[in-house]
Image (cartoon, rainbow, N blue to C red):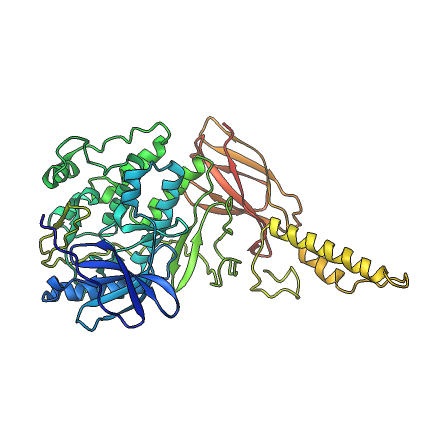
Length: 502
């Protein structure tokens, strides 16, 4: 492969160039200092070598437009601006991610299973959001996942993405090591193709190499393509990786397109099931639906709030309303795309080829409905602060001539913490010989009329019951559920995870 000479940064009004931070087949990425507001940004610039190529120019413009449609997602690199420089080169101003991309990180460090599962759900949420917007990414791989200053992943490089619809047009670049077999021929790609590439990326993070790469073996483009099309997926070979995760990745990377999960959501639910099996905090899926973020999660073991179907509320970490989760949170169907002639090279990963054409009313009227819901720890902190204020007020009122004055705000503040039930408490779970599992719990602070929302973590099935127990069929020793109190039609407690007793 011929490696081209990198370009120089263009002069952009309001920006000062700092250094080159990345290069690709048709664009270079520079770090700039933006003057107002003052911040560092990454600027992707189409190189002059391809300015004469109309396909590349249209592709570059399409990338900016596609990313702009989904870049508000927390795990997609944000687009701030796109324009044409004075020297005629188109450019895109993007959020700057200072950390190494995940390809470089995989070369330098060993990822733990928990981190890979978490990153998989986070990046998968971004990918599902793109699918719901009618966009296939088509180039999911470790090098296209960046690392923010907070060590969070960001999906980037929609340069060969495809928009759904009859006017869709793209350049058919293929990154071989993480691509499914259908990407090498005339077959159309679909949602399951992106599912494959996401699974191959997670495999790479766990193994430290791409799925069909053989250390010291023939890892040429042809060698890799042959193994991807006809070879057996090698085992990961790590004792800390559960068999369930191996099976999940193998299914998502099946050579049979139809054997893979039919949506990214289906794949992510399996990853969440592995998290639950390992007793890890289950990572939220943050999905864009009809312009609102829907966060699908099974438990609230970490610092994110619980999001459930049928609840509209504003959380402390976001000012975005959370709408009802749809009954079937999946893409409307496979997104088919048409092929166009073209080439997208990538010097950093040489195995890239061109494809041929082809708060509730019961709480208090003093609190608005959109007040952020706080966990029990936060309410306990408020209660402690109230006590402290009451004590100080009492001291002040008792000073001077010795007379006392009753505080006037105590009753109004106490009601803030008076009406929210505690989370349910596990009270045992047993697995019967017929494969059914019975889960029991107690509910401190529950009222008459309260119900319990139960989500089965391995399937995502949700039930609402009035009793403090539930029996599930087709269970295993790793089956877990998430339970919380539903009061007045809305979830009103933190979530508790219950698993079959080992």
